[in-house]
Amino acid sequence: MTRVQTGPTPASPLLRNLTFQDRVCLASHLFMFGRVLCTRGAPLAALAWSTALLCSTALTVALVRGELLPRGRLAAAAYRVGIFAPMVLSYFSLRTVLPGLRPALLDEQLLALDRALLGETPAALLAPLASPPVVEWLSLFYFSYFFLLALAFLPALASRERTRGMHELFVGATVISGLGYACYTLVPGQGPWASLPELPPLEGGFWWRLVQHSVAAGGAQLDIFPSLHTAFPVFFAIQSAAHRRSGRWRHAWIAWAFCAANIVVSTMLLRWHYAVDVIAGVLLALLARQVARRVAYREAQRDAAGVQPVWP
Image: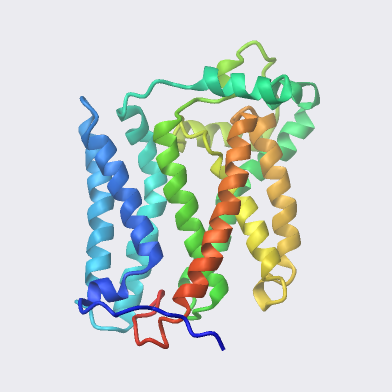
């Protein structure tokens, strides 16, 4: 058996118990807080969002990893809610935070990259195929993205099991979220629907109207690079395929792969994303998977070392 060298154990409970995902979550909220703080004229609502998310995550880490809460159900519940909920709420905060950063939109540059790579952006190339039934079919999958996220995370979050697959799932998710949200502030844009107004309007039914309504009501508007609608489903497909011999993933990987393929196509045909957004999303998924594997292997030794489990 290979012995993992963990090095000297820090005396402070907080430093001793801190995990990779704790650091990523804290770094993500700190980055967004710093971006808002350094933006002249940023709205108070953006500062309030970024401050609240950073403080709630820092408080959770301090209470649980610093062992100010005794180990048990309360600490476990506090950690799972206090780490996971702010990362989810970070997405909804972007609707206020991203415009508050007063960004210069980069649609022109992203469109130029698509045309350099493919001759034209996929939204234009796929326009002849965008019949109402096709739009409706892909809208169903585009909208199902939110339910698939819930299906992937909530059962694992509520579970008392501490499996390697669960560890990898959440490490990968924090990497995708943290890097994705940061990139949104660095490469803002609206997407082909705004940069190609000459394309004929899309026509669909119930699901297309639902997608339009949900994007208008809750979307971050400037969140295109990288495409997290691509990154998360692709990551889930890879993750489930890698663990297909275990119980909960045995047959799920086929469904994940099918859904991921449809969602990726939908992001481009429905004119939300450029090809470079999707390519960046795939690369982000691959990076998250590699990081998750290595981190889960390294932190698997925590229980043996007497350190607080990754998921109490």
